[in-house]
Image (tube, rainbow, N blue to C red; front, side, top):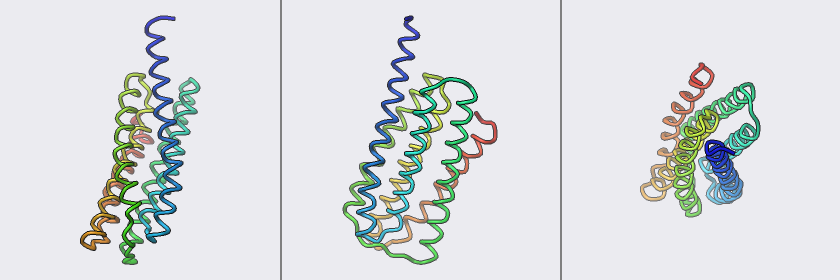
Length: 198
């Protein structure tokens, strides 16, 4: 085995490790967020749990793609990730609009604040690792999924900000307002993937 092959194998192992870490974190997160959302009656926390499901799907797609080879498989994986971004954009648009229109005021959630704060840090670290590893491998699927993870981190930060502002100053509308910014980001990724950017 050449040094180049050894280096590529190490990068692939790192890619798998990053995806399995993302999967594990989000599986635990769905349970934590369900408990926090029910106790606080928080639409934002429930919605963030749905986002975790999208991230689980995107990570599963990358694990599938890294396990095989071929341009057809790579293109299919990119389309699946693009569809995940599309689902995320629709969910954020609908959720943010509904919360603003309904004037829904969630309760304070210490568990939600703690989980989203830690999740934001973890997702940003995982996203950076995926971007570096994907670039080193020349793998657009891993890089695209790294952007899904980055959006997940941004969403965690937005939900955190909304929860804190609601708890401290009663600004219940801060969370859904931040969601619109992420809709733009997700739509941009969909256009890049399906518009031939990859």
